[in-house]
Amino acid sequence: MDLLSFPPLAATLDAAYALLMGLADLLQPVAGAPSAALAVIVLTLLVRAILIPTGVAQAKAEQTRARLAPKLREIQRRFTDDRERMSRETMKLYADEKASPFAGCAPVLVQAPIVGIVYALFLYPAIAGHPNALLTEELLGVPLGTSLAGSILGGAATGEVALVFGVVVTLILAVAELTRRLLRPATGSADAAPGGEALIRMAGFLQFGTAVVALFVPLAAALYLLVTVSCTLVQRLMLRRRFPIEVGVRE
Image (cartoon, rainbow, N blue to C red; front, side, top):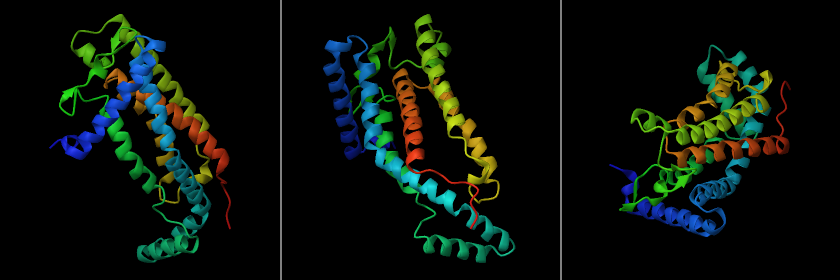
């Protein structure tokens, strides 16, 4: 069953579609043909602005995890052979610190439905029973419903398609590399879980997965991904300054 066909979700998706196309109409006199693509960018910026509080909550949770990491590692060291005692001491530590081990999960759960609705605008050929006109709009001659992989497999790839997707994917890769370098965690900041440092290093390389996804989704979704990763990088850099992570501190 398609969840987005559920009446409340379908109505929400249709309202988001109306907002997006309204933005495109508003921008058309200024932007001309690329107005729909610009509307995608503007809508994405609006969504990222709405989700700023969840980013703040995630930054606070990250700061708390880093602050408690030395104590958590000590608990693990002391109770390696007693998992039940380790779990009790871990929960006691979080309770004493008035923190939650799940603090970073709630913001993700809040973001998911909002991001899901917006992302669906760029994937579904029909919205609430009517055609998704957004996907027929163009950017530099390339319809926003075109995917690079689909064009290649369908034998419809053109120089314009290669150029537009090449620029978008290259920019996503550049942002991913900046994210990996600028937000690379110091060794002492890794979570106390066994293998935590290796998992964090691996997560840095997973940033590049967004560029791979952009090859297979419609151009509208690829633009959304580019703006999203760019905004996320800027936001995280700003929040990292507001909520700095001290590493290597043992009490």
